[in-house]
Length: 175
Length: 305
Image (cartoon, rainbow over all chains, first blue to last red; front, side):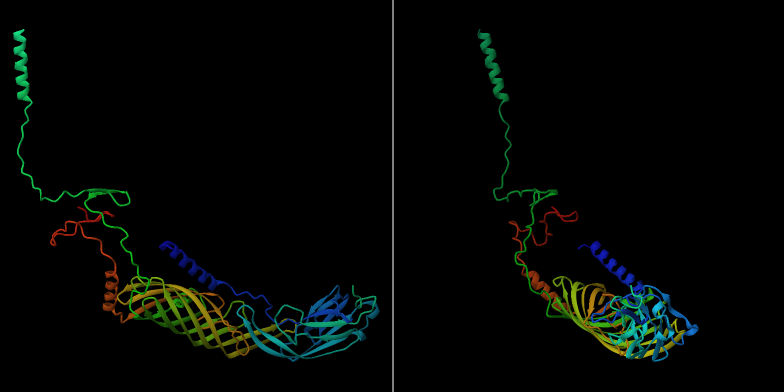
């Protein structure tokens, strides 16, 4: 390698270093821990289902804001946790004709421990939620689980809500 | 008829007198050496710019030394690396600065030790925290292989390996986490996170003498971590001596060479040169007072006869 070649290699290397230093650090995961609940049937072999005419809101949420408002064809929903309390409660309200009764609403309460965690320069700092228990009513819901036991910023379904379904139908109003 | 015969006789006499050779006697010296032949082409058949009397033997080195040329202990060099200072001036948010020492073995192998301090501070524009890498010590051990081990030690081109270790601390402060749905905001710190890291490096480098014992050195490095270091509640962003995310790194050092045993180097070098066979002397050796004058001109400034 001649002098020119060596100079080119060194210059290229220096340019790469500078470029690397200026590159923003991207985050391939979420920049916060966002619990994502998927809807499943409670059959022996659970299957992912879609639910029609369902509303979801947090108990004592500011302004009684809804996460879902009579939404249709819903397969999953984000359920953000409260960051200043160890529990978060959500209400699931069904609006299909057969079960459109507030007495059939289900509530799900998550009990957890929030652990601060610094993930990376790109994703930043988050709370990791270590699940300590899940309480729920069983009007339409069969069960609720957190398979991993912890909720991080990984973009995945980390909660599962199983609905009772009829043999002819997958869920109340399920498609 | 008689008149014709007389004319022919007269012409014959006159012609014989005119044809007689004039010979000048010259004294010859049989002991005088034969005139040297002039060469107009070199041994490769290329025409010479000027004719010469002798052609030097080419490719006369028959026994090339494969072993070391320089003595076992050939010197100690200290260096200071401040390349990250340049990058920090260009916007880099972290830096590692170290001093190094290498021992020259035959000007061939160089065991190297590097000890330094690294630190960082970064508050990303779109981040929710400030990362502070507290000044922490790191150390690297390794060896360089000098490809130019037979050449002047003032100039090196080498390949090297390093094993690095660092035990370091960092703070992640001013963390702000919001929940838009619940309308909540929490602010907290993750102080005094401690971690250890081990890493390896492969590098190529140059070292060039500037003046006297001072030289400059550059290395370009490719490195990787052995395992994933973790703090109590975090994964460290910056590792002293390693850097951040990039697998590439570089150093720029000013070096000071100590205790070069020049006399030994010279003796060794001369000893190496004496092992080369000398070309045979010309048939008529010129006087010792005369300058050497028997080479073929390979360049414009080469002496010729």
